Image (cartoon, rainbow over all chains, first blue to last red; front, side, top):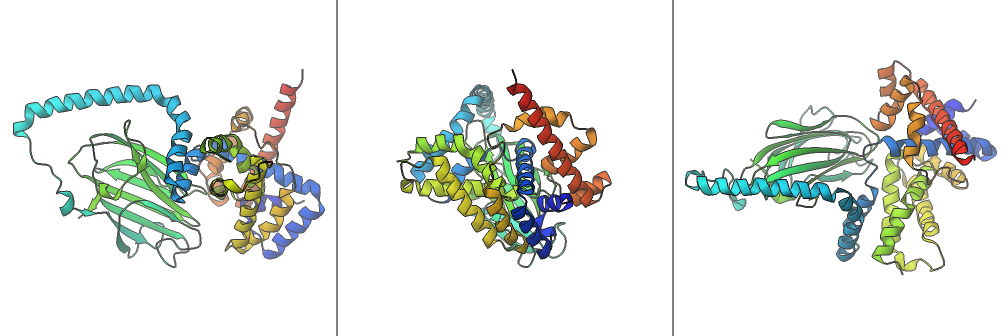
Length: 274
Length: 169
């Protein structure tokens, strides 16, 4: 008899009227078996999400990151982040050695090539840092399809958490908005970079005109996408990022790492725009 | 006093219980991890205040309870404010399977009919809402909600049968 009510409550409590929500509370209070049934459903809901959702596996690292963000003590943070990541490193250390060996070989070949070709080399295609305009050009739209007149600004980094109910970067958007960032990405050292992006909702990323991440999907929780790109020092690669939030909280955080460089939020110094 | 190494161990050993505890209070899945992380941040910030005779898990659950109720109370969504009363009822009940490895579900998921497996993947892997799942599977949103409820019941029964088999001599 209560099946539709429980199903609705589990799926989206906001779909219940005030009267239904109050009635549901009364039913639970008076019928312990109904409350137990609901608790079972919540338990299964959580287990399924843990098993199948993309971004619920790195909880410990995220706690370390939040403690760092809360400014609770850099010394602790460094130690704890090291500690929580240690087991992960142990698991992947043999893979790291292979990567490091491969990168060292590539660097050696590159260095020899540079020495041989030095006289013919062309000047770097990138302007000196002082001459570059850092940050990415951002265009924010008041819908999730990147249409209409955008709100334009420069964002130094892609590191955003927009709480639910705030409208995010677009006032009056009811938390539904989209954005496009364009500019260049410049690597501090040559190599193969892994981009990791935490996002809620959808994301698309192009580097050098090639799409490297395409996850244009609405979702109820933060997801994680990865893509590998080869970046050279001294060469600014075109970067385009598109994002949408379909309601509620919005998250977009860009990290990068290499086999030898620990993961970090991509710093502002790596981005520039025309 | 809780050292950083202690904290690391506490985080590793208790996080599944705390996340299950928060989910068991009716917090939406997309908020569970946020709140659970906040619990550990608060625990760390107040680590000097925990009496030596109070187990970390009890202290953590206390923080989690306060943060969950605060979350419901401060929610701008009116419907979520009603959830506070529901959370108080749910919090009194034991949390089933709070330490279960989620991979225990695998055999039961494989045993589901193909269409049910597809629906589970659309909800939990793709994160789609019932209306979108319904569009893809030609069902009403209500039909999707009820079917997911029944699938979870089937999975619970399957887990119980497996546990009973493993527990029997």
